[in-house]
Image (cartoon, rainbow, N blue to C red; front, side, top):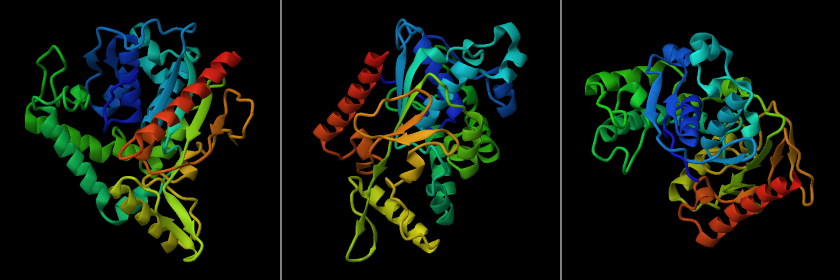
Length: 339
């Protein structure tokens, strides 16, 4: 099952969108959260659940690539622990997502190339003035495409709560200039977006908020596009499939050398290998053959060769991509059989 969440939304918003899709309900971003970030509390309605019969007897495995790993961590946290601020703000009308006590609906979390810790990519992007450029381009693109006939078909930004697009089935879109001003202000002054979420303080803030759930199994899958050249005595970005990732991987290595770091540990072009292993404040263990998997601890799987896009098959070998995901299925089947 493949869910669709806002590609430039925050981990909180994405988690709310994912929950509504899984349950076949209306997206509820939480009354307290929506008031803090000055946007609508409710989003689109999902008439049919993406996964029928979701319950403790029919748990799910959540697999997220890149920022998707933060989204599913946020969802599992809210399912288990809820959010007292939302309960206080909404009382009996609070969404079940914010009540907590439902972490037993999830078997496992698998984070692929996810920034589970602070990454150097933001530092590099900020140094070369790429951060503001990418953010501005994304906001402009989402405003233009989000109000076009392509929205919901070729693209889907899930930004109805900003008034950027009509909520499906309704006509509640804001005027163009107002929606753009709304978005720009939010993206510059709050953490309510993926760009702020990838800043060091954004990732640190999420890690401080999100707690590990004791009965959920956690797996991380780092990728590395870097190899060490014995002749040149330095790391080289050589294992990329996407040309753009070759450039970004090189910039990350160059940034490390400028800081006097000879062995960075590698990266996938966007996420440092070490950052893709586990959150710094949560228990973790390196995978070994035949090991006994336990819940409530990150199992760091063997580092695979490739870039950030290789993990999802971008310009990568089709059979290798398929085998990678089949191996994940076998792993998750193993922990189900164990129980």
